[in-house]
Image (cartoon, rainbow, N blue to C red; front, top):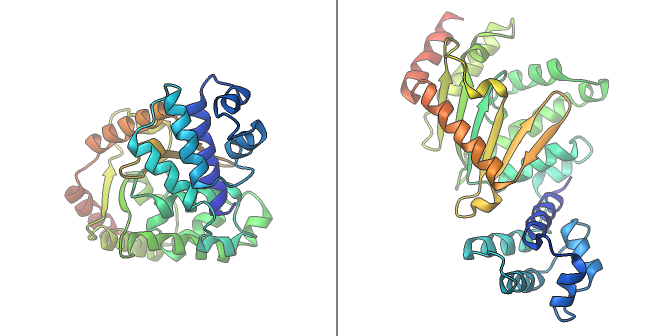
Amino acid sequence: MSAPTVRRRRLGAKLRTLRGELTLEEVAEASGGLFVTSKLSRIETAKSAAKAKDVETLLDLYASLGREVSDELRSALVTLTKEGSQRGWWHSYRGVLSPVYADLISLESEAESISTWQVGVIPGLLQTADYAREIIRATAMSEAIEARVDALVEVRLARQAILTHESPVSLWAIIAEHTLLSGSENEGMMREQLARLLTMGKRPNVNIQVLRSHTPLHVGQMGSFSVLGFGPHPDLDVVHTESLTSAVYVEERDKVAAHRDAWQRLTSAAESVKASTDLITQIRKKL
C-alpha cells in the first residue's frame, strides 16, 4: 500500500508491455547474461526494486530489439525507478487505508494534472471536513470503516495539500448539478461545502464546471472517473474509476485516450467555469 508499491507496479507494467511477445527466457538470452529470468520476473511483478542502471540497460535492449523507446518514456521510467523507495506521508495511515486508496494518494501526489468527472459526490480534493465525514459514513460498507471515520477524514483533508503547495497540481473538476442540490439534510454543511467550491475555484490551478441536470444523454452517465496526467510523460497517465466496493486503475494508452475524449466531451457539454460559479452561488443562496 506504500508509494513504492504503486511505483514499482507501474514500472513493471510498462516494462512488461515493452517486452511484448518475447518470453523472459528470450530477453535474458538477448541480454548476454546481464539478466536472468527470475530477476526480470521480480521487476515486472514489483516483487523487488529495480536499479536505475538496470532499467536503462533493459530499455537499451528493448530498443535494440525494435521496441519504441522514446526519450520521454525513458525519462519517465528512470524517474519512477529512482523514486521507487520513497515513502509518502500516507504511509503513517497504513492501518487505516486500503491498498487501492493508498495507490490513489500516491498517484495524486505525483500527478501534474487531474481531470475528474463526478456524478454523485463532490470530488474528495474539494470536500470540507463535515461533508467528507457525512459521505464516508453514508457509504461505509462495514463497521470497520465506521470506526475509522475520523482518520479517513484526516486523510482526505491531507490529500488536498497538493492543490495549495508551491507547485500545485492542476485540477479540473466537472460536477453533476444534482450533486450540489441533493443529499444531506444539513443545509449549513452544504452551504459551507458550496462556499468551499467557490473559494477553491478562485485558485489559478483549479477549474470547476457544472453539468446541468437537463443536459441530454451523455457519456458521463456511464459513471465517475478521473484522469491523472503526468505532464511530459503521457505513457504514465492513469484513469481511476471506482464502484461501491472496488476501484480500478486503467493504464492502457488507448483506454486512457478514450477517457480523455469522454472528459473533453463533458467539458463541452457542461456550463462554462464562469457560469458554473454563478450557478453554485445561486444554489448556495437558496439553501
